Length: 408
Image 1 (cartoon, helix red, strand yellow):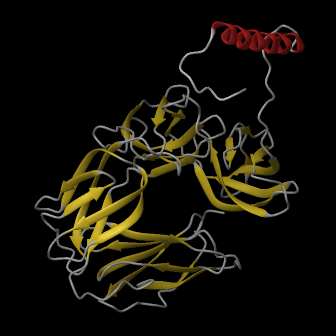
Image 2 (cartoon, rainbow, N blue to C red):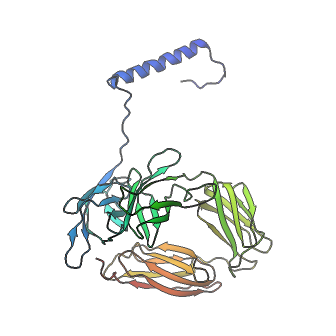
Image 3 (cartoon, rainbow, N blue to C red):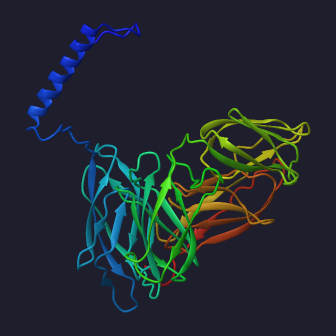
């Protein structure tokens, strides 16, 4: 069809275009059996993943029937009477490479279990073996769904976190559904958060709030349910943060913060807040006459922003300031260990990393004293206190993690 170059179109041309459209539509209608226009379905490559869910017992391991299993954003797979399940896991392609996925297993009366960085092949069926669930009597469960606020569609493979006596996590299925089991105390009001790389962490754009309070009554998922609406990256939102001196960690008052085209100034405690700020990859610039200007492209997804300003003459940033290696006793693959540096003065996690197969990690933190913690599900955590001095990198902060006692 020729490009429209004039706001005025003759009546004949309009009639001709309408007739052509009507003819095409009629042909499609007939071809579909006059039952409506049928478009080809969208197909996604999948790979089969099998496994078995057992109850972690002292004397014997019993199968867990009726458990929810989701793997890498798959549809929910339900275990049978033998505890077995088969999931069809979506993958980008089936060319024979390996991919890492996250497995979530939940059932009322048990603690939700999340297994990170499970490796599966994309050209053949996979067996992940036995997954153990720890019984959690007298607890509650929450069923829910994460949906895109703008389209109403379910969001697969989003991480849902509920903070109770324990922080429980689950990943959503292909339709955005999830099940969190093992909530203790079994009733009360609890904050629930959602994280997904394509969406904001904020659930309230005007207040800049990254959680939704959910009322839990004692009972299973038929009693408790919730819908969580998330906003895609790019949606304007209230973004907050703090500017501090990189050497003293003291707040910087009066710094000018420019995010995209929006601008504000920090208060006496170094805090700032920008309503209707742009999100996604954005230009962030922070200026103050007593410090070097900070100017970077950053991902703005609703998380609290902490910006470190360097005084004039400060040493340039090192590629890392804390580094080391984590090994897992009895294993040769040391991937999937989370290593975080928590500032001892206020408990704030300043930096975190996930180890690769060789267990190596590297963190960049400003000078100060930190509690460095290495953790992975199924293993005992390790901690070390590390002092970082100006211009000096601390290496060989190593850990060896032992399997958790009593949990297979």
